[in-house]
Structures are given as C-alpha cells and as structure tokens.
Amino acid sequence: MNETLEPDEKGEGVYTFANAAEFFPEEEREIARFHIDVYHRISKFISTNLYSFIASFINKLAEEKGNGVVRHCKLFHLYSFSSLSEKEWRKLPMDTPEGDFDRFAREKLIPLLEQKERKSEDL
Image (cartoon, rainbow, N blue to C red):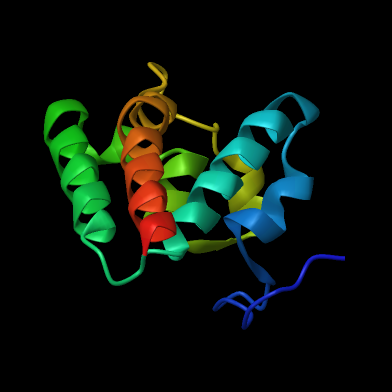
C-alpha cells in the first residue's frame, strides 16, 4: 500500500510521485521507474546546485511553452517535489506533449549526475 502524506483540503490522501506510481497506467510505469531512480540520485546531492539547475530548466520551459502546459504533467510535479492526490496524479499525462522533462533528464541530468557520482567516488 502507498504511504500517504497529510490529507489535502478535500480529505483525500496526498502522494509523492514515487508513492503514486502504482496508480499510473501500465504504459507509464517504466518511465516512472526511470524518473524515480533519477530523483533518488538527485536527492543524494542535496547540497549541490542540482535543485537550482532543475528550477532554471522548469522556469525556462514555462516561459517557452506556458506555465499551464509545463505544470500539467506528472514529471513537472516529480521534479518540483510536489505531492498530489491520487485523483490528480491519475488525470495528468506523464510529460509535456514533446517529452521535454524526459529529454532534460536523459540529456542533461543523467550526465551531470554521473559526473557528480564519479567525483563522489573519488573522495
């Protein structure tokens, strides 16, 4: 069973992305697992500038595509550390129509994480 956070104003359970993944359609679960792994790797480097790097990407994307498009996907809420109700998670698509968050993770975040992980191993 999923661990819920405090209920929202409607009394519904509130879930992080990782805890809500079992509610996602089957076709979204593999990509959800990939991004949960990226999220966990990010959390190991909490004292670095990764969070501002992600926030800058989200802000730039919102300027380009509009806040409504960017905020209307599961991966936005993962990378902005949001928690939502089961109903809210179920109604959102995984990513923007162009796959912006997935591309950002694969092309920008993963290489940066690999670099940080190598430096960490050298210590």
